[in-house]
Length: 499
Ligand code: NAD
Image (tube, rainbow, N blue to C red; front, side):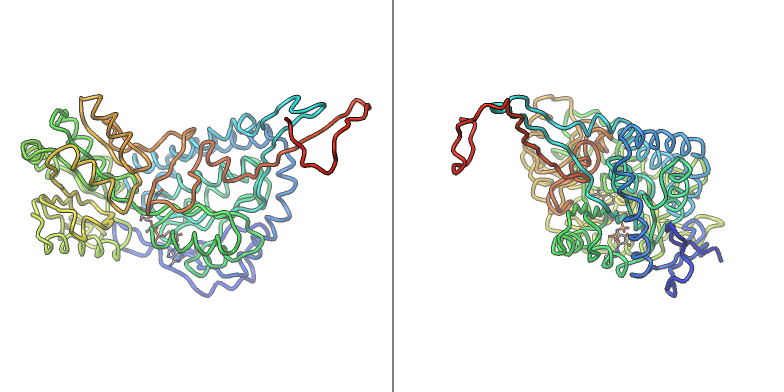
């Protein structure tokens, strides 16, 4: 059995690795590897290596650090096909989507190629007589990232690339469900010229997460995962005196106005609700047609589109989407389908019991559509994270606006309309962090910033872009006086002012 170990500078010999978890091929349901579930001793070793390496990395000029980013990007691009395959057969997303996962991460690396510009501080000349004020952004020291299964390339790179580009050492604790790709990224960082100890990977579950949250030498933790765990990570990390950002779950709504181009909407919804088997925090699992006429027209177009979706092995280029990540997750999704039906919604297309010939033990869930879902249902309130689309009908624009605004999650939302005023009004008033206007998955580009509101994010700094730079640095402000030698006549006992 292939064993997936930590990637720690100085090696892993002698570490306590008695606990292991199975890593599945979701296409077949077979165990294809095991990953070590590390303990405190593994983290301590990684932290020691990070402490040894970080000061010199922080002192390396930002242009040289940026060069490592350029090199890494080229190495990943050269290996794109193999990396996408590695990702696809552990996660279950199709190859083209796996490439998108990696490419989205690389776009953050591209942003980091310009890190010298982002680190230029502010400067005020002549803030007082002979006085200049300037600020600088300095790294925090050692940062950690704890990441979910659903973007094993993009999310580690959201965090790690920015953390390292600004001069930190970074320790990644990826999901134990698809750990191979993060390990390969660690090797590529070294090949790109990153000093040993600056990017390391420790594997594990709650025990390792707790060790990270409590470790006194780790200054900041970036987490992405489900909301209850995000909340826990945020509280425990902050209590230990760390800077923490913790992104959580989502239930994104797509509002369909009566004037929307419904063919386009159906095409967009098919990808946004069912792509990656719905395992995206920016998926669109709820569609809100405005008015019954819109609902009927949309439903009539959605049903054949959903029935035509091809569910297949993740390496099949013709498949629209592949299996979900584990058997336990498949059972959870199917449990939510049952729950939604029990709550009184109309099950229009039922994806349970889907079997792919030759892959009967794979973790596949067929596309599922519900109509007449209402806000009082648990299955609406909660994240299903599978290929399940729920139609919630709204009478008018105000009711449609209220649904995502009042929902516990506030990650993303989209409105489909030809009416600029409605779109503008919606974007201004909706209580959600990322808004799409005729864009079903409004994941911001790397030089903007990613983050939801409400129970979709704890902490107040987003991922990547300048918000990422802020998260991974602290500001120092210098007030300097170079007197010309004449007495300044000031009263040393009074707080200095510029008045
Ligand atoms: P998860 O919460 O199960 O796991 C996330 C991380 O937490 C993993 O590294 C895991 O090992 C660790 N973990 C698991 N149980 C833990 C516990 N009890 N205590 C401490 N740590 C624990 O999430 P997942 O299933 O891997 O990923 C899917 C979730 O992530 C969904 O809810 C999805 O919406 C969310 N997500 C959010 C965003 C975002 O940016 N808001 C992006 C991607 C995914």
